[in-house]
Image (tube, rainbow, N blue to C red; front, side):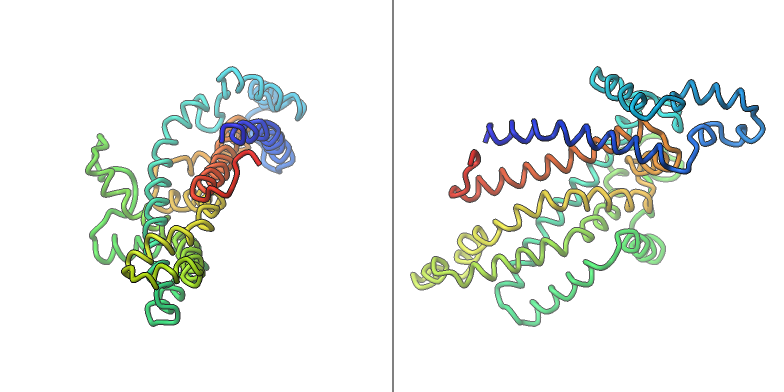
Amino acid sequence: MARMTGRRALFAVPVLLAVTLGVFAVAAAAPFDPVRAYAGTAGLTASQANLDQIRHNLGVDQPLLGRWWHWLTGALTGDLGDSATLRAPVSQVIGERIGWSVLLCALAFVIAIVVGTLLGVLAARRPGSMLDRAVTSAAYTLEAAPPFWLGLLAVWLFALKLGVLPAGGLTDTGSEIATAGQVARHVVLPALVLAVSQLPWFVLYVRQGVGDALEEDPVRGARARGLSERTVLFQHALRSGLLPVLTLVGSRVPELITGALLVESVFSWPGIAAATVDAATSVDFPLLAALTVLATIAVLIGNLLSDLLYGLADPRVGFDG
């Protein structure tokens, strides 16, 4: 396990270098002018000399490799630079927002895994039954629904029509302090919407895996020995059927991040979504690079976690092979 983790960590180094260089290359080729975005309306009347000075202060007058190397060497010492659009250090911008994004993603992922596993097991228990058809049909329907559409639908139903949950934000209107109760109420809708957007894959994978496991000889033997259906289902078929699902955990991380950005935008959740949008549209090199690195690290950790879980669940899989 330690050897595989070390290999993955070494592999992550060139990947992160290539990703950050790619971010700076794409930003340099973008038609957006970071100086105009930084100056705002004042840039419309500013002289060319003033604009050139701003360009020099922001460091965007340097060659591509020079900008990338300056950011990289600073990042290695803990200095991620300053965000030109948000007028704050990048580390501060991320530190103020990343916790809320992690809270939202963690809650949504746990809900998706637990509910998806339960529904998948129930559907696989009696293939072709009304419950199986209803669950799989709903899963395929939700699979095609974009997260922002689910978010708007949830706001219309639960916030506007029923009025049982707040439509967005982190706290109640007029409140200056984020209490635990307010955060808990406000996170319900975005977490549920994000969970529902991830739910179909877990439902379908568990249904297929458990359904195949129920046809295997060891499970049939357990039934022949007179074990209860619950024991056969949850202690034999589910363990074998969950192995493919463990690989799904890592592969869903990119979709989870993308869905979180959309859901945060719909519900005005104070995560990193707004910062990501601002960084992309304003070509904010330091902030854009830092956020991209964080997303890449999350994907690499997710893939590593999937392999570790698979190896722990199936002893036949070697960590160091």
